[in-house]
Length: 222
Image (cartoon, rainbow, N blue to C red; front, side, top):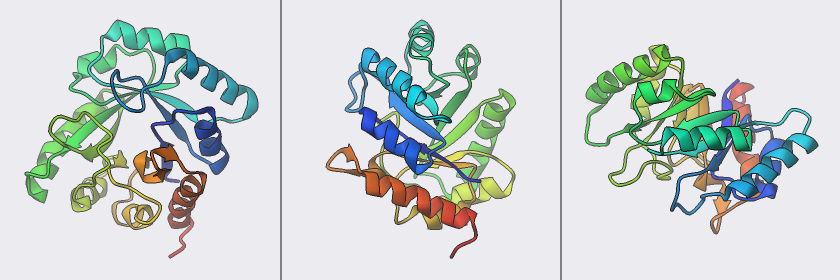
């Protein structure tokens, strides 16, 4: 079954709607200075409340980018995060020092053709997997570390998936295009944030529609 991660949650209602809709992972942003950054006290309350009210809650993923390892570890322990997603230029050595499972974002350049992009990413995916980590493929945009809301050439991801690499597909996914994306790429999982928002806030109908579209492909529906 394709795993679904709803990222960039800022309110208790966001994580509750993701859980009720059947998300496997929910993401909370701890990158300073970004629009979706959460105050840690609020994050603690959100995670605790979700676990109290939902019998089998989604895994809670903290989003970080090029932050001191001690700060990441502190927030993992204090908030009770299940996983960490690293969106910056963190090394594999850095990833290996995190005390919970890691999702490493790999940025896909639109400056390369399919063959060259596949060659480059194959090596990166191999290194990430050998280190025991998951990977997310997202569109690379200069000056941005993640959450671009822009897609990349899915042919690159399709070839990588056909070669046995497992990853989450991210970038520009919406309830309307995630079904075709999953059908074409067959990723391990998908990751969405702005694609299930209206006016910058999570939209319950879009969250539900997004997950329904993914499950429809899983169940073999056209």
